[in-house]
Amino acid sequence: MKRYLQFEIESDSQLSKKVINYFDRSGFKLLEQNDNCLKFTFNSSILNTWTFNPLKWKSDIVVLINGKEIKAKFLIDTSAQIVTAEVKEAWQVFIDNFRQYIIDGIEFEEVNTEAVKRARQSILKLTAWAILGIAVGGIIGACIKHLTGLTFMTYIGIILGANYFLRRKLISNRRVTAI
Image 1: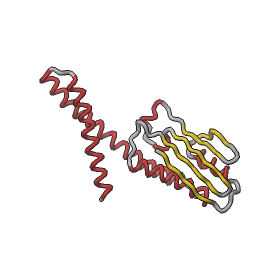
Image 2: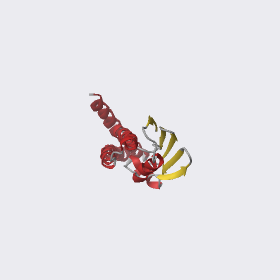
Image 3: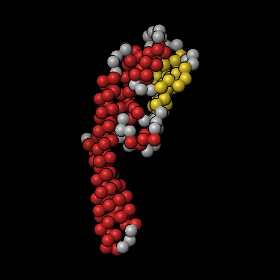
Image 4: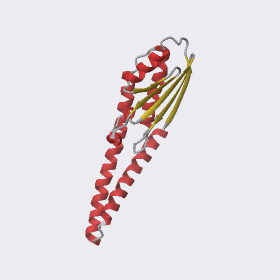
């Protein structure tokens, strides 16, 4: 997922320090600092797939400072992640709060935490639906395996069950969002 941000500020005093402070307080590591470019990262771990906080996913952020103009590029690795509308919203809140923090110096941590909480809940709900689908599909597949003697039917049941339950939940979520 890629996000871009561009804005101008009134005063450029202590700008680099403010940018570094925002990302440092958010858990990002400063990789590189040049005259007009700051690069931040959040490194993923082996357990990145099981991290339900989207702001803890592997991501790289490049902030370019040109006088009073700021351009930022956010590269978020969403491979093997469940990206819900709430996850996208959490990242948008994080990005909007970055702009507001630089411009007005607002406190952002509580707002970011609330957005992450909503994103985490949406991911956990989808994960629960997938687990339920795996269980139901596994039971049905095991029954068919018992009747037919075909071992692979259990695996097909698991896959189809997870797929069915996830699709139903995602379609249901889209309908609620559309209304």
